[in-house]
Picture (cartoon, rainbow, N blue to C red):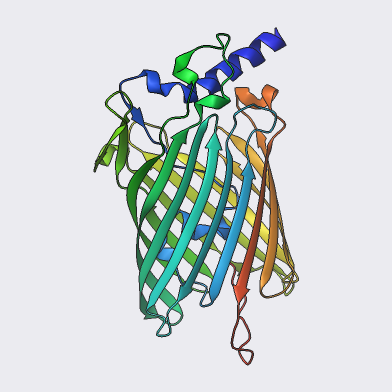
Length: 316
C-alpha cells in the first residue's frame, strides 16, 4: 500500500509537466520561506534600502525532501539606500524548480522613504521584472518511449510582472503590506505559446507582515513576527513565530504555518556584517508520510565601505 501511495504522489507531481495538454496554463510564482523575516525584500519591494547599507541575502530552500519533483528554490537579493537615504534600490534573483517546471526571475526594486518621527520611516516600493518560464518535458519518463508529446521541452517564455508594497519601520519594529505580483500571466500552449498578461484583482496575493524586538534582559532580546497571506477564494495562511537573540550573537526560534508545518530556526550572527541561518520545517499535512521535512539556509551580509562608520545592529 505504501508503494502504491508513493506512486500516486509521483504521478500527481508529474502532472505539473503535462499542463500543455490543456488549452491554457497559468504561471505560478509565489515561493514561500520560513526565514522570511531575514529576506523581506523578496516579498515587499518597499524593504529596499531599509538596512542603511549595501545588503545581500541569499537563500536556498529544499522543500519536502524525499518527494520527487518537490520545490527547490534559490534566491539572491541585494539592496541599498542612495546617499540622501530617501530612495532605496535593489535587485532580486530567483531560480525555482517544481516538478518539470523551471522558473528563473529577475526583479528591480525602487523605494521612496519618508521620515515620520524619531527613527521611524514609511517606505513605498515598486518592483518590476521578468520570469523565464519553461516546462522541461524531456525529464519525464514515459511508458511509451516514442511519445512525441514529451519529445522536447516547451519554448522558454518571458513573463512580465510587477509589484507594490508599503513598509513602516524603526530600529525596534516593522509593519508592511505588499502585493508582489500584480499581473496574471496566462500561457496558451496550444496557440503557439501565446502569453496574455492582465490585471486580475482576484488573482492578487496580499502579504501582511510585522515584527517587534524588545529587551527581555540585558543579554536576551525577543522578536515575535508574523506574516499573513491572503488571496481570493482561498483560506488565510499565517506564519507566526518568535525568535530570541542571545548576547547579540545567536538567534534561536520557532514558527508555525497554519494547517501546514512547524519550524525550528537557528541563526548565527558571526559579526555585525555576516549572518548565517538554518531552519527545518516539519510537515503536518498528509504529505508527512512521504517526506523527511524541509531545509532552508540563508546567508546575509551588510557591506560597510566607510571604515570609520560602525554598522548598527539591525534585527529585521
